[in-house]
Image 1 (cartoon, rainbow, N blue to C red):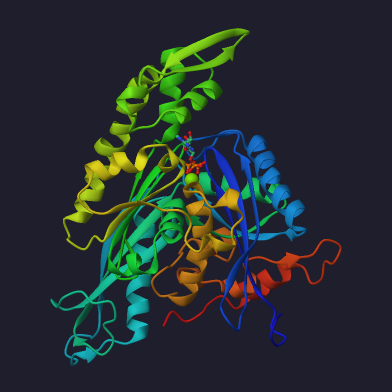
Image 2: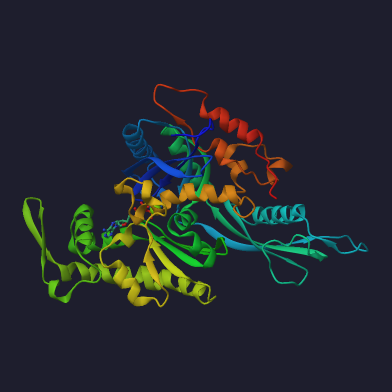
Length: 452
Ligand SMILES: Nc1ncnc2c1ncn2[C@@H]1O[C@H](COP(=O)(O)OP(=O)(O)OP(=O)(O)O)[C@@H](O)[C@H]1O
Ligand SMILES: [Mg+2]
């Protein structure tokens, strides 16, 4: 039973992946802060290659199918949502910005919250001049005063110059806008965008791992990401434009079979196959004729590509972070991590504890959405919670551009929409009240919230 009269807080996320599009809606009790998943929907993505939209009409249809599934099963109308995207290209860079705390001839003074905000704004300004990408994320990594050590909160420290180091994730604007347009054509209103790497981290890592240090690796169909997290925040991100589809394509090409059959074969074998089973036969019908391949045949194709993805591309980035000696665990998610034998394979090859990261807090998820390929979907709402709790470390400089705010000096500010007021609206079918747009516009009007 609900206590008091406070409305539950609704958050929603749409995850546009190369192979699947999934939607999640959660409800949080404002008194107990208990979050529950109230709807999920998922559909096979069509019209997307390596995270990039190739055929918008097919993508609109796929989104609609995912939304319909959630709406029908859970008797809801879903409108406002956040979007997770993972295009094949992204620009991840760090930028240091120096902010003077005093003018010449004036004494040193202590750092204030406003100085921190101004330093970050300065870094955003420089980053904008640097490239054409849409700056989707700006994450302050640390502040130092004069030549002191970087700290998370420098307020009160005395000095002449405040330096902030900011991690930026910039995405090609056209691709992001195309994703938004597809979602809008499917009847949704997009309130913000999160990169798949960030969503995956918040979807698969435990609170302790986020604090102590962990790497979240999401190997999807078209893209793979490595996200390093420590001290409660994102420290670094790497993106690799490849994933499980490469494996499927290899099987299809070398055995000269359709991709659907290659996908079947790939899932039938284990990456850590028992030698006794290598000569087992896998059979299916192909154009009326039986097609037979042994486990060994398939493994000989799958294994080298998996090794390439894992050990040539992803592990150097994981090890780089591991050298910092703050690595509690490596957590794998994305559909490829669901492959049989995957855990044994990675366990055998990394010294640091490894685990498969199903969506955190997945108890209220329906069983079909508890697999590790749903970590990034659940991660969208976890990201929103995190951002709400720590608005000063999870900034989205592109929000003004995406939401059409005027390009004046104000838009140099960093907009933070309050997800509690605007993220998603739950409208029971046949009971549409005040439109979700109203809440969104109100939120936009009041969006310039103090960072500190
Ligand atoms: N049991 C399994 N065995 C092997 N591979 C699997 C298994 N389940 C899923 N995959 C692979 O995982 C990939 C899909 O993963 P996921 O659903 O995370 O991708 P996505 O989110 O749609 O794509 P991306 O995030 O890369 O844009 C596909 O390549 C699929 O073949
Ligand atoms: Mg994905």
